[in-house]
Image (cartoon, rainbow, N blue to C red; front, side):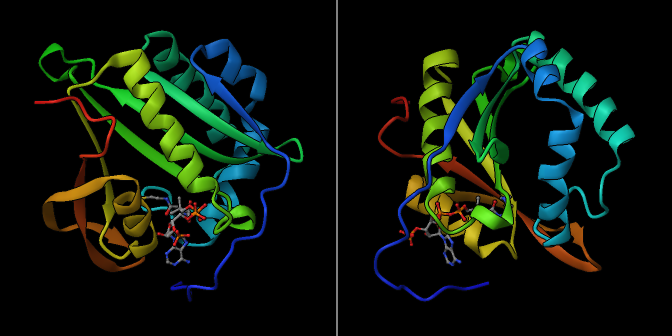
Length: 192
Ligand SMILES: CC(C)(COP(=O)(O)OP(=O)(O)OC[C@H]1O[C@@H](n2cnc3c(N)ncnc32)[C@H](O)[C@@H]1OP(=O)(O)O)[C@@H](O)C(=O)NCCC(=O)NCCS
């Protein structure tokens, strides 16, 4: 949904940022809390990969898979908690393929209740700083589906530019959408 510029945003409520870089940390957060975070995002039709609500059993499997990736040092998750619940997550992923390991890829989602308050920008900026500190990548990327204009605005604001597009790559609720690739060119980018 497009938004009118309406001056100042509401001040942020108290929040906690937790960097999760080990499988045991994710297991501690647990499948139930993750399911309760994902399902409102899926219900809002913003998720391009998940278009059906997830079950606890699916989430338990996901936690085990993601825990392995975290322990392989190819994934870091940045959690945002508000009122003790997951309000947003940003991920930094690095390929297991040595010839691609100089890249990192980000993803981000804020739960609908807390969107439009500045958390997305805060979390993505933090993810960029963490990615530089942990992986010192030569290039940083993310992608979105073309209909996700809000994400596009956030990404541009933070320093990403569109570099490529795959026409009709995603099927999103029976509509074909382009996959838009964006590369980070902001102030933390390494000189090429
Ligand atoms: C996209 C998303 C991460 C943005 O996070 P957010 O916390 O809602 O955004 P913020 O409040 O931090 O806003 C940051 C910038 O995003 C853009 N933005 C946010 N909401 C917007 C809206 N409703 N309309 C237009 N632009 C918007 C603006 O550029 C804004 O900067 P500004 O306030 O100076 O104009 C969040 O809406 C979300 O998680 N959506 C669902 C999942 C998703 O789409 N993830 C991305 C997958 S590609």
